[in-house]
Every structure is written in structure tokens, then in C-alpha cells.
Length: 233
Image 1 (spheres, rainbow, N blue to C red):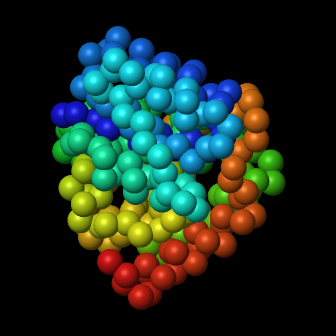
Image 2: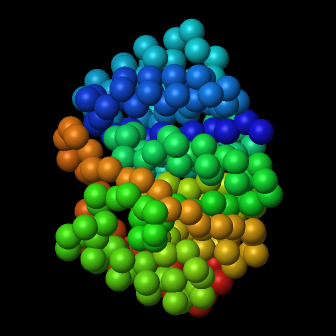
Image 3: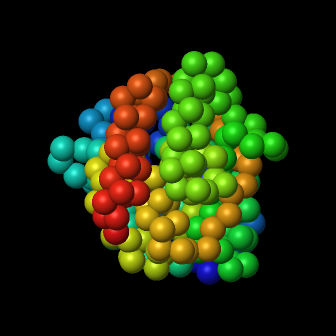
């Protein structure tokens, strides 16, 4: 099965070349049938780097995002371009693990329709789960876990894998970071087969994260409540 990695970038000039090259070499060396779909919302030179990396590589696609930009918009643009059977949103700052992505692919190939990663279960290695931000994230995730009676403990984490038909069925509409829980929670309600595995997640080395946990948690909870009680499927 072919896997499409959807990689949003927003002002990641320090990461664009590193992320694309690391992912390309890692997957190529392991014989994975893949494509990298880079979606750019930048104004700092990232776009030129992505265009350069795309040249001469048939399985690399660089496209511009929406205006105004948004993480969810970028993913949705990537979904329309992707040609793979498996879809994996992958962060452009290398905070997600390519080893975990391989585990996702294997699980999808073995019959799962969605695979979620968790920073909060035994076996996980996640620097982002520590401190006040980690506590707030765990609290919000615990609420969502109870609301949907799911054993998945990290629904707000965008690093997941889906069969493409799940994305096509759900037709996500969110424009922000809450698109990750929109797809996952709607998928759960639609009874798609899923599992959760521990993942590795590291803090970025360069620049600052574009996501504020204090701003995104309310949108996550609002999205979860809307899906749960208004059945917006």
C-alpha cells in the first residue's frame, strides 16, 4: 500500500530541507512505497526550499496552502493532492517519529483503518508531555476519552494514520489544529477499526511552535462536544 505523508509548513526555513530530506531518505532506504506532500503557508523562504526539493523527485509534491492560512486548511489541501492508500499527517518540525510512522503503516496494512499515537501511555517517549502544558493536554484528553468512551488517551495529537477512504468518507471541514480530533472522533463514531500505540515526540530544536496549548484546547473541546452531541458527521 502506498503511503502519503502530508507535511504542513509555516515559516520553517530552518526545518524544510532537513525534514524533507530525512523523511525521503528514511523511507527510501526501507523500501516504503510513499509520497511526500508538502503544503506551505510560509513567507520566509520555506516555499523556495520545498520547490527545490521537489525537482527531479516524482514522489515529492509541493503545493501552496490557503489564504488565510491554517493547519487544518493545509491538511485538507494535502488530502486532495494525496494519491496514497494510507494518509499520515506529519509535522514539519521533526517532532514526529518516522519509526512510529512505520508502525502505523504496518498496522493499517494488517487491517486497521485508523491508528492513533499516544504520548501518555507506557512505552511513549515524549518531552512535550511534561510540565504545565503536558498536564493541561492530559486533562483535556481525559475529558475527550470519557466523552467518547474510547481507550485512546491522546486524541489531540495530530500524528495519526488513516486509510484514505476514511478521509474521503468523513470529509473534514475544520481549519485549525482541531482537524485531527475531528477526523479521529468522527471515525470512532462511524465504527472504523482503530488502535492506539505509544509514540516518541520531541520538542523542536529551532524556532517556536505555531501552536498554543491554551488557545487550542478550548477549540478541541468545542469540536469534541459538537461531534458528540450534535452528531455532525
